[in-house]
Length: 114
Image 1 (cartoon, rainbow, N blue to C red):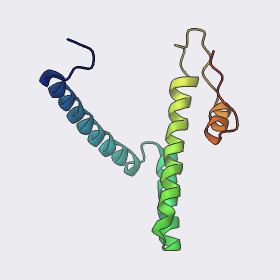
Image 2: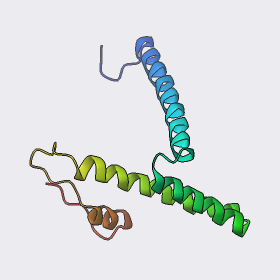
Image 3: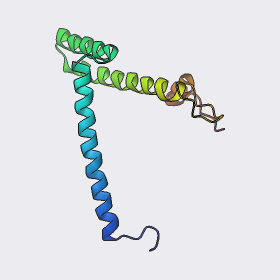
Image 4: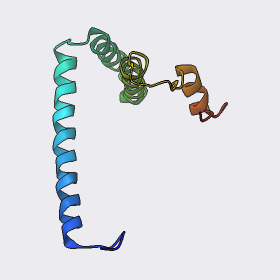
């Protein structure tokens, strides 16, 4: 077979993989909602509760979007702290620091390759 050549077998495998991603995403969303409502991680639950109460107090659904993006950033920072800083699998390579990531996201400084 040539690289990039279409065939039914590849199409069927891709369809199965997309269905698996859809199931996994649905299960992950359900788990996150259960964890937040069950106060498994109190920091995230408190953040969502305070954001919800702020939206109710101001009677504005427009505040939900900044709180949602704040939640995503908190989640990414937690994952960074758990899997990058706390990991011993770097094998001599230094991961970018949080400051480097923030400066790269703001476009102020590029992350230099090793």
